[in-house]
Image 1: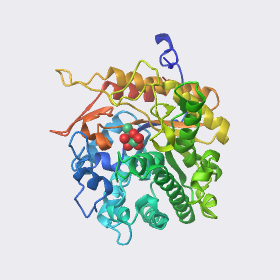
Image 2: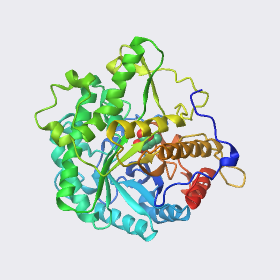
Image 3: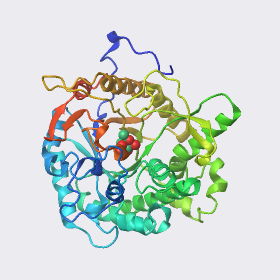
Image 4: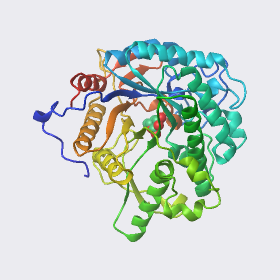
Length: 452
Ligand code: FCB
């Protein structure tokens, strides 16, 4: 058991957060919007992946939470919980359906309406430009494997912020470039489903770093007073055993999972252990482009990586046994203190940049009580314990600006489909009825007290 002892019940509600701390939840376009063939949206890589039968439970995202039509109700649910922030993503294939060229004004109109609704509710909209829904025509030209994608991404960033930048001041470039690279291009579990191994992973990471640097500059050149940043998934990497081989595997995995992205952005550097493998793809000037003095870094945290040496996998590293006594329905270990570790690491390694938790949450097998309510005891505990760790890191001087839960709604959990529920609000996919779960009520109470 690696989790820290639970605080006593008497301490509940006594840990206060700074004034103005951001509270809310995150979603992504593909996972909630539905309407994949409406108003001129083009096909993306997840549509293709789904049609190829790659989703474990056979579901798809054509309707999902029907948020495209029900966004007003969803914003009202956020308002009722007292959210002061909300991170959502813009669907690139709605805005520029072919990935480059013609802009689809109906796509922009949707986000216009959504943003106005969010602002009317007194919530700070935090827009994320890329949460995995790459227009298929761009993938057909090589997707994140080639540097040809850099220009189109910056153009797309320009188009979106030109339309929404008068009202949305927080812009996150990418969501989890490491997951895109490893699962999409390395081991084929996510769209576009390629098995390109180490070089494919590193190329996808590097080109996302470049696209991000270009988009940040494109936005900064045209707008003043924006809060610019990106969102990374950080999982502290620890060895499965004390053996030298496992320790080396954990260091390699840390470089791939955590450092290529963060060191590229914050330091303009390639991690030493990967320098040789990346030498062929890093051209002069690349790391200067990747580096950018962002205002705010979003961190998604779910668990640690416990890594062991195992040949046959990229970087000869694979997941070992985290030796914990609690797992979520995803099979992910519950390790709240890993969040504390990484927040302190940011303080010490990167000069204490402003960060916020952009995602944190858990899938569990919810049951609906006879009266229709959902008592999601495990998720409630999970979220509370992680908020407590955020508070602990704040107390120890980490520069944390907010906590957004993943996710507002049950939604389309990528390759797992609709079966894995992460919402603090239940979605009945037959009726589209929304039911706030106990975790939602707990979060609302934390927000009300600005304390846990
Ligand atoms: C993250 C993704 C998010 C969701 C959660 C569970 O990796 O950013 O879309 O799938 O995991």
